[in-house]
Amino acid sequence: MNALEIEDLVMHFGPVRAVDGVSLQIRKGTVVALVGESGSGKSTVGRCIVRLLEPTGGTVRLADADITHLNRRQLRKHRRDVSIVFQDPAGSLDPRLSVGDIVSEPLRLMRQRDTAGPVADSLRRVGLRPEVAHRSPHELSGGQRQRVSIARALISKPSLLVADEPTSALDVSVQASVLNLLADLQRDLGFACLFITHDLSAVEYLADEVAVMYLGQLVEQGPRERIFGVPAHPYTQALLSAAPVPDPTTQRARVPVLLGDDLPSPIDPPDGCRFHTRCPVAVDRCRTVVPESRVIGEGGHRVACHLVNDDGTGPDVRRTQDTTDTGAAR
Image (cartoon, rainbow, N blue to C red; front, side):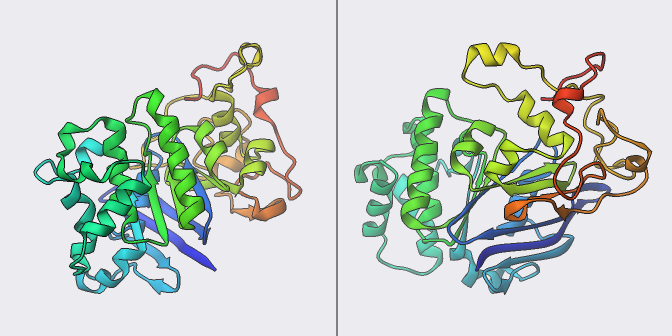
């Protein structure tokens, strides 16, 4: 059974087509990573899932409940089933409240009176002493504040956690410990997780499946091993080629895929395949016909690209790259 199903999700801000027809499923107890450049619409998808934004179109289902257009009162009974951890822990914690009040807030909204015990347990679970409940957010380090955010998100025992770049605002020395914490909590508590990130090394470590987003649409999705082992879409190949590897010799020998131009505007996205303006192997059909997402391999590996065959074979831009192009994948 799926913890989350979104179908043809659309989120427009006036003329800005931030999300434009995204369909995604997350099975119970699994981690799906949503990756892509800044401005691709990843965080907007996350905010639609937790209903911080009401989608322009499409459907959001938690388990078997359609929450797409519920009002605040109707949403209340579903709030405990989905939580979110934001990128910036300093900005997501109310500086006027104590840590204990922050962590217990979901329980108070559910009208649970006994909060002291659950708060202490939740703080211990994320590696903090119960005495931290009496401190203010500004007295904590960035890593500790993010642990408080995680404790607050999980105190209601949600079935789905949206983690929106939870480590990108932290020092490098702290990022690994927070990732390890999320991995341990996900394994022990069994919640499903949408992990939104730029960090492909974190994706390879944490995710079961990967969805690649470009300019408001999904271009490829599938099991982690397939996406990292045999990426099919040229954009996915470009992302992976830009990610550093820990072996200096291998890193020096790599040639990143060069892409033309900057990310097009979501106000006026290109016709056909939205990636064709930057794709080094685009053909005429890519400029006029929108590619359909279709299954190409094991585990439900899907891709939206005219140039990829049904057996998953197709151009590898990491080998066919014309080094005279300008601009690099970032």
